Length: 102
Image (cartoon, rainbow, N blue to C red; front, side, top):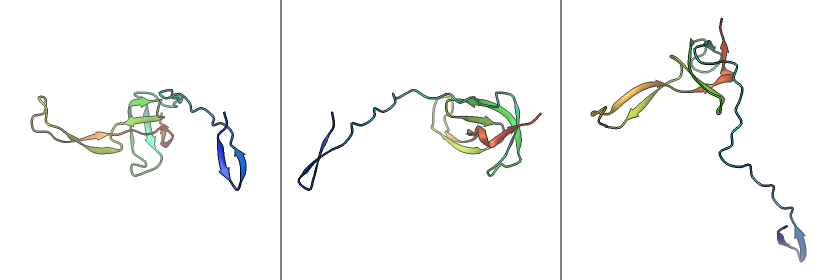
C-alpha cells in the first residue's frame, strides 16, 4: 500500500518500495583461475609478482595467492599459542587483478 506524504495542502503518494533481495543469497562468480594455478599480479603493490593460488573464494570473487598481499595477523593467547603474537598471512585479492601464467 502506498505511503501518504504531507506536502503543500495536497495529498502525495509514493510508490510502494521494491522488496529487498533475501539475505544470505550470493551470486557465485565463475573464476578464471583455480587452486594450484600459477598466476601473475596485474596491479597494486605486488604488481608483477608470481605465485600459486592457495584458495579460491567464488562467493566474493577473490583468490589467495602464495607470497602476495601479506598482512600481519595478531593472534590471541590460546592453549596452542600461549604467548600470542603476530603472524604474516596471505590475504585475498580480487581475481580480476591476476592473470593465469602457463
